[in-house]
Image (tube, rainbow, N blue to C red):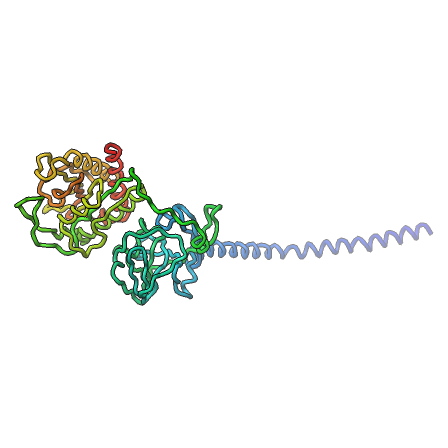
Length: 439
């Protein structure tokens, strides 16, 4: 009986054993083909990850959303220098920019890597005019809810400006320093130059929020207030789009006369007229000086003017400026001549001899720092007593010859945006040095 029970137990155990072995065997048999599945799954997952990376790195920044960093102060107090923003590049494929949108655009076309960020003020087909501190849209004053500084420059919008069917008029919120549609270098922005709409500020973290809400609720920037210590700089962008061949005396009471204003030179390679280059650099200098706390008086802000050299000096005198900066490009019959120079009156000048010492110091500081910043070779200081715009001045004056438009290499170099920025910065550095000595 005992033996039967033991045999029965063995049979039960033996019956159980194959079942376990069978289960293990089935698992083992099914595991073998799953290795192929695992490899296929791994490859599939890798392809998904690669697709996501490509989407995030290439597709999203190009067509959907892109991070950009604010460079400059032209949108204060809405946006600050170094703010990190997200730009929506998709929405404008389905709808048009609206008034007060903050947009990113390429002012010089998409072939140029420079891009600006401004606020849309005027829409296609509208007529814009700026009178004093008021903006008129189709004859009616525009009511704005966004923080902005007052305007002292109307630019090309001083007269009614009709926008084309795909053009937008844009302004920076910090309008004293902003280079925007008021100026010919930017002008109305065509639809194809608009990259997208700034929608979110992501850094600094304590200012995180939508650009729209920042614009409406942000604190208004304080307007610059002149104090006794604030220096005034008068800037004249030499020449204009049309010469005035009439004659005027080269100085007070002079019998000698010269042309009222000449047409200026033209870039031998770029074909950019001198008067345009002068104004571009003058505006950049104005922006740079204002950012450093100076008050700036511009003799002209557009190219289509008729202001003689005598009249320019009188405007500078009347403005009660502390110094007078005259900006010019140089030219020579020899294409090999290059370099920058500064012209000032001699002590023997019958009209402004008493200004010679300070004019020389101003010329030296501006020229040295200009050449240091730009890398353009210095040709030194030159005495000139035959310059009408200098002889009518009542304040220290210098005429900066920025470089030779007749030299193809120097011409091309001066047409680059980064060079023009350095030109303005270098002049401003020189003006700083001058006022450290003559406070």
